[in-house]
Amino acid sequence: MLTTKASSRIKVYYEVTKPKIWYLLVFTAIGAAFTASNLYHIPISPLTWCLVIGGVIAGSASANTLTNYNDRDIDAIMERTKDRPIPSRRIFPAEKALYFGLILAAISLVSAFAINMWAGIFMAFGLADNILIYSKLLKRRSRTNIVLGGFSGGAPAMIGYVAVTSTGLWDLGLVMAGLVFVWIPMHIWSLTLHVKEDYNKVNVPMLTAVESEKTSVRVIAGTTLMMVLFSVLPFFMTDTSGKHLFHEIYLYTAIVSGAIMIALSVWLLVKPSEKASWTLFKFSSPYLAILFIALMIDSVH
Ligand code: HEM
Ligand SMILES: CC(C)=CCC/C(C)=C/CC/C(C)=C/COP(=O)(O)OP(=O)(O)O
Image 1: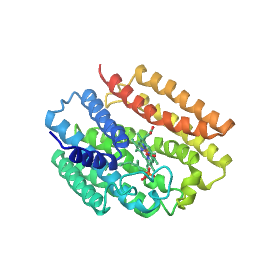
Image 2 (image 1 turned 45 degrees about the horizontal axis):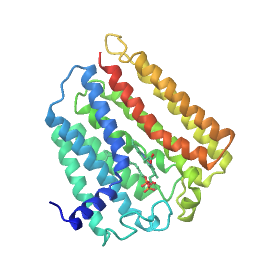
Image 3 (image 1 turned 120 degrees about the vertical axis):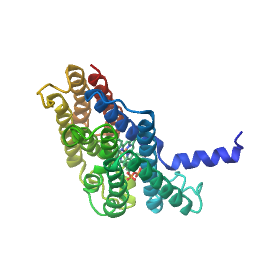
């Protein structure tokens, strides 16, 4: 039986990993693995499932913990982040989070390389791109920070896919990872428009925090349209025999859910408001999950 102190320690270290975020990251890895397994009729062993799910949890949790450690100064100032475990000193000294994040990174790399070399490479890339390129290098310097820093978002899908097969890794696998990558700008820029004062307080040049509202809503609408157009790409992909990989289930889901996202972005474009930007942001995660659910369901045939 865990003492109250022990359970609260576990809870605070769980919180510092930003679980809401890695739930979706892990789901994209599961979706890519399950879809590849069905399309190529390759079973996934329980050990492989454990290594994929455990590895991507550890990797995403590590990245989130280490970026929280890196951002502890600005997180203490922003309203949205000031109550997080490190700025609120519920993890103190902060180096405890640093060591926790590094241990998680090691676990994630061992798990990924135990799957195969490519899974290990994608894990290492995801960690490096999110922690070093995005958080350390670009976040506080460039308004395009989430573009070069966004590739890491596709890493879990690539890990899930390559855990099953390398057949189609650089077309279908890349398209699945691309669904996440092209989703990021709309996802984060709708949020940062909503909390732009926070970002300007700490001089983080998120594009929709430094551009005018008029430009920001246009950029968000444009990236939403780009994401929806990209999302129908899987329907047009075929295997070597020319057979479509996906069918109406995926197409109609992508069209209907995409139409909702476009409608929300037009609402923001026509009538910019905190409510509209927040609504678009809150719809963004379920939307991405729905696309991966549709890929999985459509691949069962
Ligand atoms: C450079 C890329 C990204 C940036 C800068 C970013 C940034 C953010 C920020 C600032 C939040 C709000 C967190 C909070 O206030 O607690 C957030 C929430 C979230 N992010 Fe991202 N994100 C990125 C990529 C991703 C990716 C790749 C995924 C998963 C595939 C993801 C999933 C989520 C989820 C599920 C939430 C919670 C949404 C909600 O509360 O409804 N993010 N993100
Ligand atoms: C395989 C692997 C390791 C992949 C890692 C992918 C990963 C963790 C993506 C998450 C990106 C993300 C939520 C960044 C948060 O930005 P932020 O730190 O600016 O958000 P904040 O302002 O809320 O702290």
